[in-house]
Image (cartoon, rainbow, N blue to C red; front, side, top):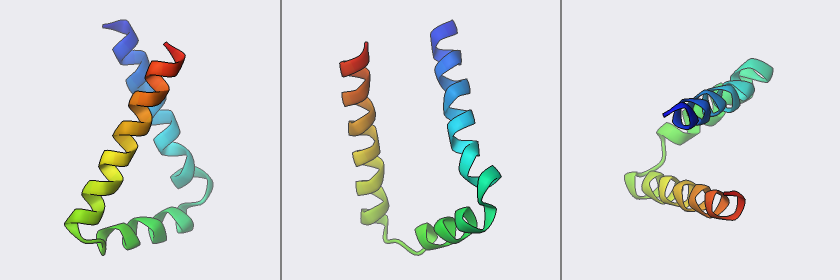
Length: 60
């Protein structure tokens, strides 16, 4: 359970970097993401999950 919490904490740190460093860029990127079609968002989500699974497999 502690490993899961550590992974979640690291995700929050990484997710918070762009809004902290460049809030205008983050806001524009988020605005563009809201204009994508559902299929495009699903593809991005699937790709992100697959990359994460590959990285977990390689480094664990």
